[in-house]
Image 1 (spheres, rainbow, N blue to C red):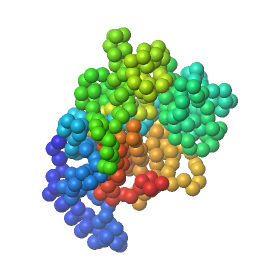
Image 2: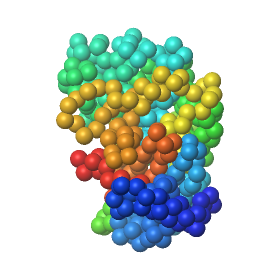
Image 3: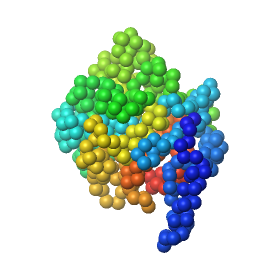
Image 4: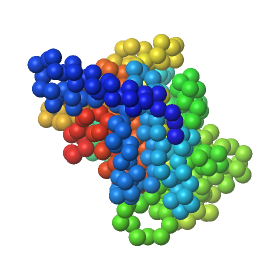
Length: 416
């Protein structure tokens, strides 16, 4: 548990000041007082958190807050592995799940700034994996389409070992959330950098941003710090449910050790070559295609909750550093990239965008194996952000309560 840099008394004084200021305006006092002056969760929520965790069946949670563009507060509560009673702490590694996508998107935009990728270039210019189908629409899918989810590709194929990847509609015409598209873009990044995903992310982002506890890969040290996922409160099955990525990594790790090449350093060709070896030693259903045992831009980031907050700080309050995104590129990352009338949310380059009573906010959720549920929210106008990571099937119910209590916002995204 980390030290709270904004003690309870200070928060109460800030709230009192907000109420007093509201009394001098024409705004209704009730409406003004409901807008928190900080996104650090209120004391009543933190005091009640263990009860809510028990009721919702969430063993562990990590929360971190960015204020004024810097990590301001974090807290880790509960258990990493309920079968052993292992506690979570600030060093615990969480599966970020689909929160992996905005981090990868940031690195892609760094490559755009460097001229190594072009936002509106066809993706086939950089990589055309053999599993692509024959649709003429494939040649029209761009880097921008991937980042704003307008490729027309499915989220994940049901049978990737036998099913070619095909778009359902012409790119740029509708939103189709797609992890497959991010994997294809990952192969394009491999092609232009000559590196694995994890090598590129460390060079471009993790190392310069001080994200020392972040990786898209896997090894024994990462495994020892990683939390386990748990079923829902009514789950009667003994032990832990399937762990998804952890199960696949553990099946592939013996091959990596035999080769002397860490999983974090594997590229797609390595995963292709390793697949039959992994399948020979793994239980059925763990590894169907090379993507199952390859670091995954769409889903395999694991990090501390504080590290993810450090990334959020880059998003909501950019540093003056040569490696950071150029202003125009960052503005594009924060702006809606496709106009589809009637939608409650927009798509930026890597983020969702929702209009709220405080203005537009960025957000993204994540779910891995149905047992890791995560959420990140950013307010770029005020330089603040909130990250919540959980290790249970019902973690989304808990993170919604945290977001509502900390921010005063009730997002449409929670109900639609």
